[in-house]
Length: 310
Image (cartoon, rainbow, N blue to C red; front, side, top):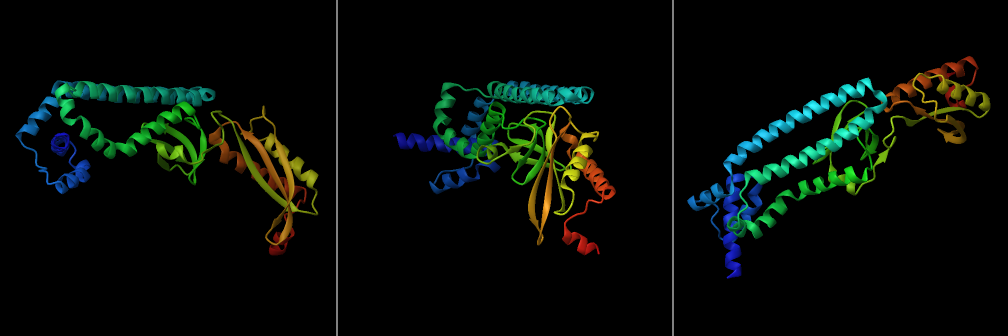
């Protein structure tokens, strides 16, 4: 009797899903055919569907979706305008907006489910057991991404506005949604990454919620050149850049490094740019300043490069 009741429930669910989500129930359809079940909905199934769906609630849900969409667009516009006028609070405003969006998403989904479907004991008895299996298989990736999004918001491996490196991509986090994270690369491409991927892979954040971030610029000179003078010139170029964040230290590290068949002196600048969006501008500005200063003080690159020039 239990097996028979389970097959009847499976048949009811299959026909119901065939009405609602035909493309998403192909796997369940094949399973039902393998058991000799009929997959064409009949009048009793349509009657069951009409009992489950509250059509008045569907209209209310549509109104709520429209209102939520307009609200999010309005808040996004306010956050964008405030971020331009109050630059030092831009990341904080974006993080608050991310929490707000997530709350609106969850509240809207809960409201839609509650007002659009009639969860009466009879309906739950008919579709309860089978629906758990079917919905579980159909939405497992979506649910994993949803859980991943919640964990990202709570654990905060990165935040809105952070410059991160993940899976070979490097750029700014623009949006944390229910299903995915939007990352804008430095060449202005938008990369969509499912939330569940962040649960098992390593993510590197350059600024960890701060507006400023450390930037590294490398230089190479010959071993016979004036290293101390070169360090001073690099430090001076960084300190006088319009993009430098002076409250944090400027370091120039030196080390001997094999480079294309010769040994060079490697000088690495570590300094902080005042805003993540100026990272490449800062690198370019400092590189050009140092190149000009090296030429003025006759500080030459490693020998192998001089031979190629000669």
